[in-house]
Length: 73
Image (cartoon, rainbow, N blue to C red; front, side, top):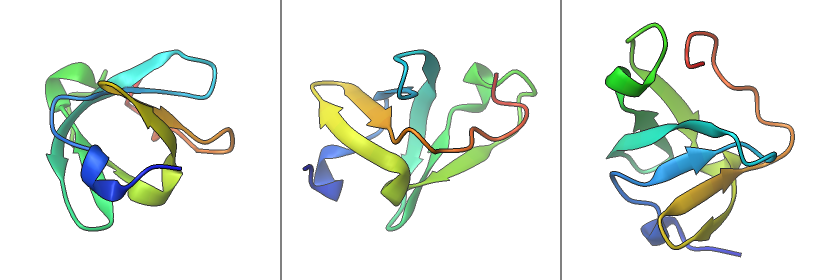
């Protein structure tokens, strides 16, 4: 288990298989935004904090069932 305070800007986000999803640009109370420069469509995309399974060092790993927004990859 992790605490929301462990999620911070510039962390790498990976899916449950370890594939890179992006880098956190902004952290809000219940969600975080991925850096637009990292997204295929260059648009802002948000993921809920609840979608994170665990945090280890500078990597936030998403839950198995998380839908990656269209345009991120």
